[in-house]
Length: 206
Image (cartoon, rainbow, N blue to C red; front, side, top):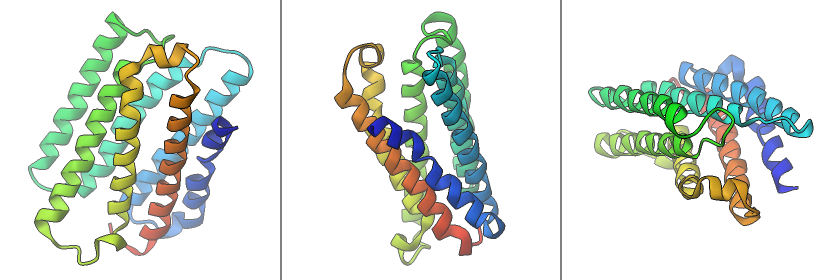
């Protein structure tokens, strides 16, 4: 049941996209594109599972979309020379992903290595944003900043799921419901965070 709740939770930010699309600034439009692509992949993965078809290649595809999509969003949020860090991290992730497919995890296997590296990259994006807003000190009420909540929830999700990808194939192949229940809970939290970001951010300018 928790797995189904996690899968259907993508509907929350998807609905938020359609409710706020006409009021969204450009950065939120990027988040909206990411949410809609994620929703399509989630639906496709569920269809494959229902028909007992190997859907591991979708996890590989999503990892690319996740890292590149989040980097695309943070490109607007992170200023100055820190943008070089974004380019460097995405390049490292892409190179590692290619090496990973060739040497370790094929498209028909769970991509634990790739998702672990991708999680680390996204974690660094969030930390860069936090360091920037604290150094600049331009936000008077940080709790009212939708990108602060976006980054906070994203950090909680990536930090919380990293150990799943450290365990990798063992978690995927064995009957470890506790680990995947945690992942499902964090995924629901992430989608609530995306919906909240879209809803709070429609009156902002970036």
